[in-house]
Image (tube, rainbow, N blue to C red; front, side, top):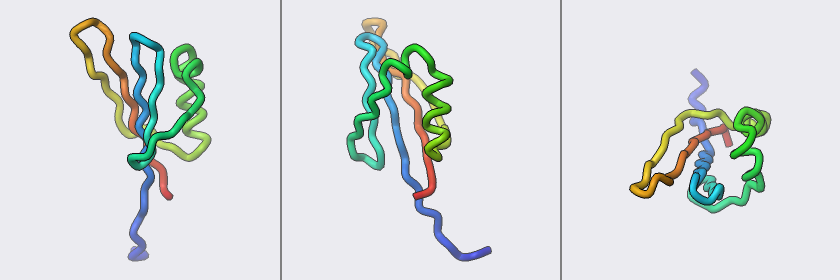
Amino acid sequence: MSGRVMAWEYLEVQLFSDTERVRGTCNGEGVERGLAEIWYHNMPECLNHHGSEGWELIKMGANPSGDGGGAKWYLFKRES
């Protein structure tokens, strides 16, 4: 073992189904990904895009809302 401590960056992406809006944060800072159309209409392409940038999908889920909307979210990590 090298004794090196791994430092990680985390990216969370939220998709809001009622407005087709995308919001992302990286290590708590807001980021503009510019990929809303891809997220909603070609999920594999978007996941491949983040994978090619070194991001690994580690968790995904959904937060339903009472009005039938809600948000899906995806959590990625990569070594910084």
